[in-house]
Length: 300
Image (cartoon, rainbow, N blue to C red; front, side, top):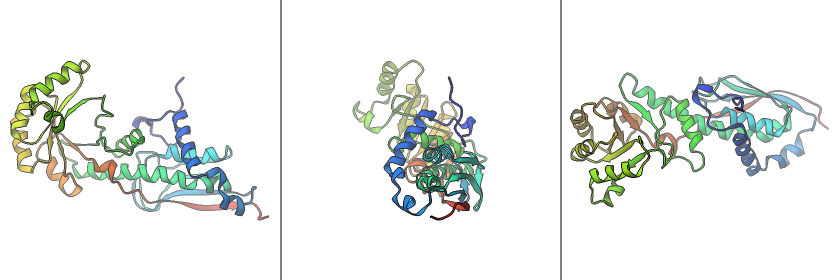
């Protein structure tokens, strides 16, 4: 039986976790924060206090990770009612309401930090990705992520890249072949041999990509039958030369030294893909907060 989509998930983006995995991850985060033993809230908030609060964007961005936030609140109390206002993948303006929750005040307070941590982190990835996507708009280039992800959070961070309009590179080391300089070093730099061995050892139809440092290596990778050629830390002039040599026969991916200031110029060389490690390895969190709207219950 297929589980129903989690609250706040955009089905078309493919939220990567099952309901059971989502619950397990969120429970681990709540346990890490000792949310079920929140001594401040237990001491100061009456057990019968109920209220309503909203997750509000302090700055504009793209939302990702709401299913995790909603699960955090609901795990503290089955009486929590959550309403999603801005779904994953949607843009929100500064001051915009992302979601609101109502129910036992203790549950709302004790789940607050875990809920916000998930959404702030993943929304930061989605927001930065959207900025890169916008920067290359009108060119043929698409923005890709990398494997430079937080350990154990790769599926979520790659989901957040999709929320921001980016494209996922290989999911893991078994997903595709990417022959880099250190692999070539083991074979004396022989690109043809590396590609041949990769095809012999890999499953039929697997994508074989070769990282190249200069035009000569690009020509060797093309001759060897690489499916994708990665242009590693090349100057714009060298990229232009490689685009002209390859002439559309295989996709070209630019990587290394990619910044928002430079990405448009890279895209205008004619490359097909631009991979950006910074989408996931050094993303600032989107500024979100929980604003309390109304409360009920008498102090005791």
